[in-house]
Length: 553
Image 1 (cartoon, rainbow, N blue to C red):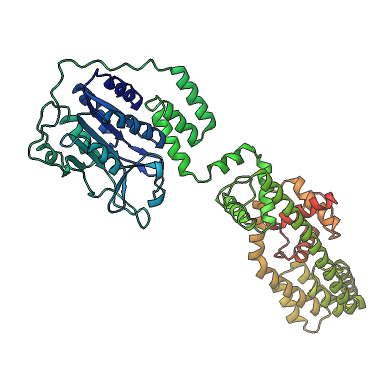
Image 2 (tube, rainbow, N blue to C red):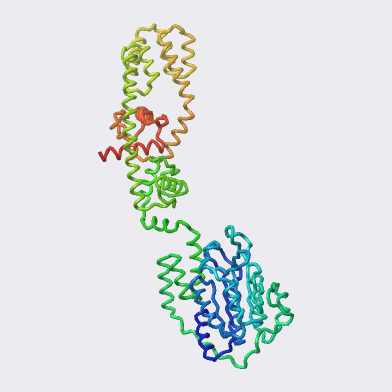
């Protein structure tokens, strides 16, 4: 099958009188960049050999875009100017406004009435060309449109419009039009009228009962000029360049140069894939940044600090991270592509650093206020040194700044009581302390309702009750901390930061003991985080941010 460039050469020979003055134009589109595929849309081009055997000058074009279609139409108009017979076959997608019809080129987007431009071929204009050969002009339309709307004023498909006198128009499915063109139009001096119905084609315009349309087969048909050997090296070089650029325009350029090239179908497929991905350029630009996994984690931490939920800080940009990026872009006036640029990463990091500083300052204010309230309550209660005051303080501030002092003083008071208590009372209390369970303390209270250790027993019963109530939530918090998989270095970094903030976490050895848990609870309380004594992702993010900002000062 020859393309329209060879048809142009044939037109030149026709002008010199070397060939019969019959002209044919075959345009078949089976792959649209944005409008999808058309089953057997290009099969009509197979009729080219049969028409040439009958002496027709044939121009063919598969999946023509605006520029190649325009060139093919220009060459065809030159051929048709002096032609005795004219055959035009259009197969693919069409649009109409209720009166006029257009054949859509393969790069057409969803058309609109006033923006068709060069992306569509006016069927009415082609009919005007066909009108130059009344009684010997045939237009075949292979239309597989579904009749959907292209906006308010334009619909897909064709309608019966005004047909010039002497022009025959036959419409059907692309496969039926292709079969008719290939089987019937290749027969010389054949009455084609009966075959329209046989091939399920609808005929309008000039439709006599007898149409001996095709000419006699010429005794000799001059051999058409053979195409020069294709420069495979040039084609391969252009293809490799197109692949390197990997843009729709690069692939279109390859198809313009080599419409029947070895990679034409792959180029069509790649164009469709590119157009189907609206943010492809943004994705490729982010890929060019070659972000490491640590860099991606840092971006996720920055987003989390700014209250954009990435659903994890793992260095993998999944749906959660992409949605967080999209939301951040929307809030900052960027196109919502979900892919980051170098400029955006720098701005995000700056915002996160500022937010971390704000959070640290806010935490410091909370800490100072909490310390003020803690001290004021201590001075009114525990500082007096008596047992009720010490217990009142610990009840309000179990992890307070003076909790260790209060605990030590209560222990001393208890020791003094133990020494002064009657031997029986003291022994009963020692047994209850050794057992250290609800039943033992209740037995002590039952046996010694006025004993010296009633306050201690009641307090311990209250603690055990609260511990039981909190056990479920503590288990969940412990499991959440274990899921973080903290290594020894990270655990020591946490203890170091807690110590720097004067929260007294105990030895910096990576082992979280009771002092460490109390320090964590203090930090969580001061920073408005859920108070559990166990680390979670939010606490780690805040602690690391505090640590980084502390180093930067």
